[in-house]
Amino acid sequence: MQSWEEKILIKQAGIAEGEQIGRSKEKTEFVKKLSNKFSIEQIAEILEIDISEVEKIIKEIAK
Image 1: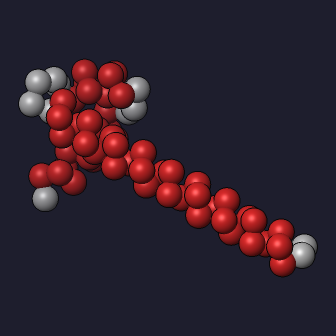
Image 2: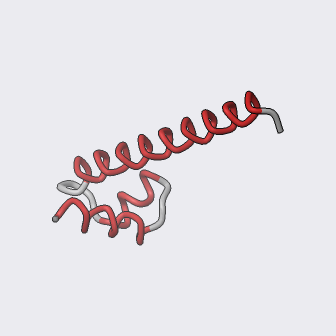
């Protein structure tokens, strides 16, 4: 593999990681906003994620 190919792969990995972090922050913000009005089950359904993930986010928020 040539160096320019390696640089492209590194850049793509960085972009993917940044997108994942952004989605995680968005989920956290949504859970914060929804937690006062909806149950954990309802939040999970709205965000289309597992209940365990919602619980994990709520624990992180409470810290």
